[in-house]
Image (cartoon, rainbow, N blue to C red):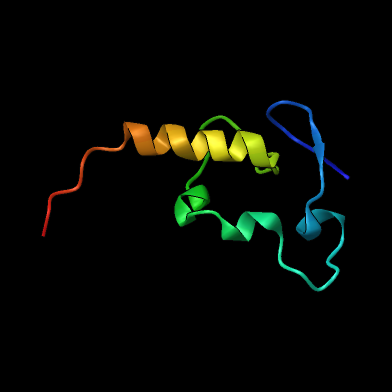
Length: 67
């Protein structure tokens, strides 16, 4: 089990805990997660924290112009 670097919750990360042939749960999330997290070490976050972070980033993003 992995420990979330943000909230301390335990969760399963196949990339860290071992790959059973299935992709990690985080691969289904938008690619915005590839952006660096300011002030954070490069460690995994649990699903709840990562999804909350993505939602916050999306809410803060400037609107995109219609093509």
